[in-house]
Image 1 (cartoon, rainbow, N blue to C red):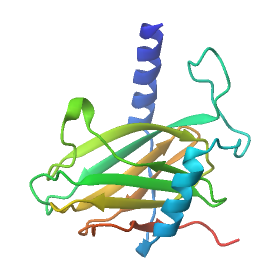
Image 2: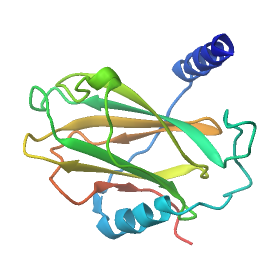
Image 3: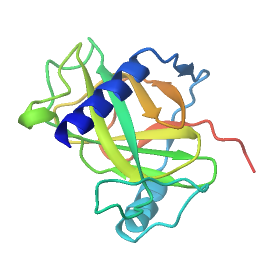
Image 4: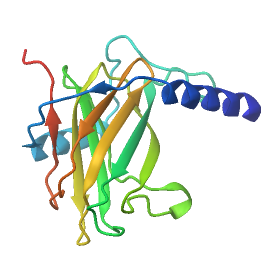
Length: 181
């Protein structure tokens, strides 16, 4: 079973490494603390099936309505050498469904946000539609300059969000490219 899981994981990573990312252009930073707070409460509660998608995860074959995402973050060479700040991410679709990751942690306790480095994080969250918004949150005193964030969804093309500026402490900073209803 572990060999099958390892083979599937390797196949998925290989497929995404050959994927062509969709470039999101004309960035307009926005602050959205209330969205993060609302989603944190929503994340605590059970979520309903969104867009008819869901997934079987090895939970005795039960349907869990959870999807896997891969978040790749490149830290700018203009960033401090490394940061011990807590970094969180929220991304969502045009229908209001969001995935909030309260603290991104590197493998084996490694500090992932070093100057000029790129790290990937596998996360599981509710299944959402095409990702069109992303917010980063920084809590701490070291400071941090993200360069790019790429979110890979197994059902949609990857989406790139360009930052390359100092992320302020506290409220989320990011982009909302979702179409207006």
